[in-house]
Length: 418
Image (cartoon, rainbow, N blue to C red; front, side, top):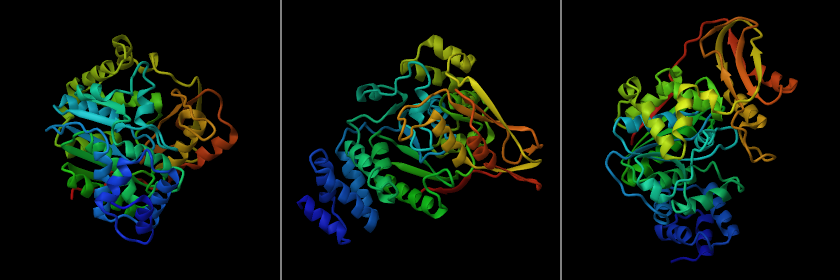
């Protein structure tokens, strides 16, 4: 077996690494100097990872941690993140109501993209830190990654974040697929976004990542489907942590926005489950209630939230409406601008402030293709103070209105299965 300097020299010079090389790195992740791990990641960034290298790295990351037993009917989804991306919170209980087992490991927000864990923590008492034993006995949960699951990923990701190696497709693939394979899944659906508010700005990069994750996941014994979706415009009408919980409940009641429901239903279909009947008869909403109670929410609180979410969930007390400067049809709404401003206002983490305010958010009052008149409100922000003039100016530029009628199209651009 090669030493770490020998592994680094090989990758530096453009040679393929072996399964033994990756095993050495993942099994000794706690003792290898961070300088060497950073050099390894940078060599991967510069010289790339082949399909076989990506698969071997993923397998080694998976083998270095705990793995749940694979079972038929055990399914999950993963999204690469966006503005208004709340589908997991609806999909998990709906899939459970349709008969699936859903062991969903999720993350916190990153930059302008909201995190499923942050959203759920706006619900009083919701425990997002389940132990591996609690996960193993739970038919449907949404929780953070434990230290036991893919521990090499946790360390490598923290170093990728400070070494400019986050975008490397093989490293992204290994990070995501190792965690999902550890859940013991039969099937996995991936939502790979591209656009101004996605980490993948170009369609070709999103397609390359989708194909990489599908190939690697299938190679590990899962049945994986990837959907490449548009992330130029925000998803749904609600953005922010509490706000998106409110919209999730609307979706579970069958009253969700068209674009949000399209993604939720298509993801369930890709996993082989028709969730339309369980949303229609209320059993999906009941499974959401049960999941919340299993994860620490009091029955009284979740009942109140389902009946009138704002009676329990935090909400910014200062409301600010923005008005359209012209009449016409909504052509686009710049999702990145809205996400970045919400993050700066406190709905997401910044370098200056690692904490978040779950009550800060926004509600979109119009949709793509809607007609709007000059002076008509198009978005409302719920904050703790008035928005300053600079922020208002930035936001006003994010609404694009045209004189021509606009057709709202599907967000799903490609579907990849092999």
